[in-house]
Length: 233
Image (tube, one colour):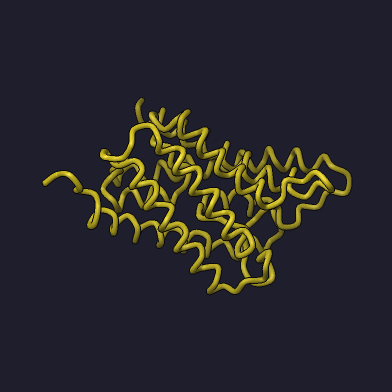
């Protein structure tokens, strides 16, 4: 029953991340004169994680992201046996949110799915950044995201402040990398939107699994070696 509750929390939290973050990009970013732009989208992603961390962090840890789950396994913070169920729950939650967004967005006159807030490189990068640039950005930024998550949730960190640090970190990551890849650092977010976008999004999806997972795994191991035993001596 405990695992079922954790998976429900992960699905709900990932639903909220995709609905709030990608929804802001699809529905509010480009509205003439009053659109929130990239700054608003960045803030929206950070707010989804901040709010869900307080809502379900005590239930599941509020990963909302397969790369985060991989990083936590690598850091010794999560049992490996829970990894696959967590990833499935995150993918289901993200896909449900993308379906809701498609239903809403398609109600506008002249709707076309287009990129549907998907992630891409080359011609499908907002700034036309290369595959290599996109890979490096996704791997490095996901790795730093894990370092913030692991550090702010460490037993010696200030109690109760982790959601703020994590939410602000995700906001900063989006401010940096929206022009590069439209910002993934989360395979569940990328997969959800690629399901409803034009075919190129699924064709490029491999990068938005490989780079974030690799960056997170490296960060998890590095944190475990360098910082996890602080204060034990």
